[in-house]
Amino acid sequence: MLTLQDICHGYGLLIGMTSYRLVNGRYQQTRITKAYALILKVVVICSFPFIFWDIASGLMIKPLLPGMMSIAPFVYYIVNYAVIANILIARFQRDSILIDQLDLADRLTRNMDRAGLRPNPRLRRLLHLKSFTLAYVNFGSMVTMLFLQSGFLEILVVSFGYSILNLTAYFYFASFWQIARGFDYVNQQLGSGRMPGEEIRNLRSLHSLLGRMAHRINRIYGLQMLVCRLDYIIYTIIHGYLGIIILSRGVNFYVVHDHFLLLVRTVDFFINDLICELSLSYQCQPKDDVSERIMSQELSDFLIYENSLQLNLKLCGLYIANRSQWLRMVGFIISNSTLLVQFYLILKKG
Image 1 (cartoon, rainbow, N blue to C red):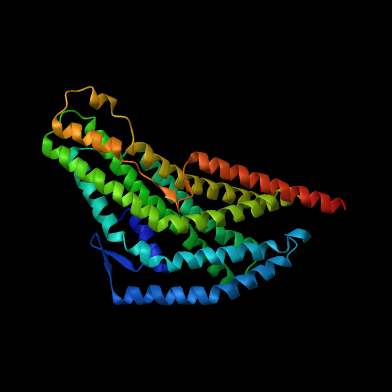
Image 2: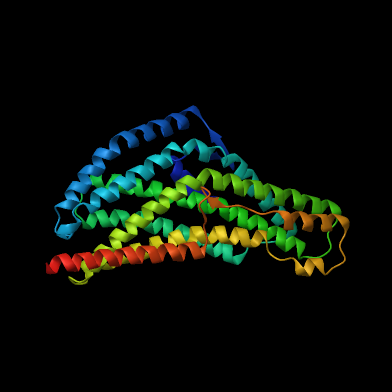
């Protein structure tokens, strides 16, 4: 049975973000899929600058934008193109850990089935919410272009570009979702009661694998998520400013749709930071109930090892993605959007 992550991976194969296809529960790479991904990458990188320039030129002359913001579409689509190109170029790095991620997910599923455990309800809700926000943001970007009376090619290109941006964030989320699920499983097993030495050694091996995989994911996706965050900040500042200006002219269906799309994309980005925070919190969750029991030597060694392990999940060595960082980013966006509105009002009076 296909899962949400399998469906998203298949969509990623369709738009050239990966060259691996899922066959009977295993990832396989063929010459056809490699050639398809390479050709699509070359076509996108070479053609998107001209298409984006044409779209930005069309938006510049529409009455939707204030006169002082005619350059905004060019700034936004230049950033869009740079981010999309970076994501496509980094395909080989993402593909390098796909098989290891699948092996880890299969190992977790087998262990949880054998122990009669289910994923944390909070993690399941986050996965479903992330899948919804991914689908809606992709669909909403296409609806936005329809509102702007764009041509078929423009709608296709913008939808394609947004799919690459949003699916990268989803792959990042899904990778750390498995890490959080693994650490939560380890915590549940440790809290379940007395365990034989072999089971404790298996848990230690799994815990070590989760830590190494978390560092690999963070290293591979670090730059991609950094440029995605830059794209989100530019998008939100411009749309926040334009939303206030357009809202002052009256409320219509397009305004409601655009504001709701902005809200959903904000939630989508928040979930990425939240899953990183959950992974760290599950990894360093206190084991007071375990330490109060009579411990075997294997369990004592495992707890000492776990307490000594520190995950460094800073993106590109700059910051740790968590709710605090997300709130600071939102504050920065609101401040800059408000500043643009103030400039608009001053220039309008002048």
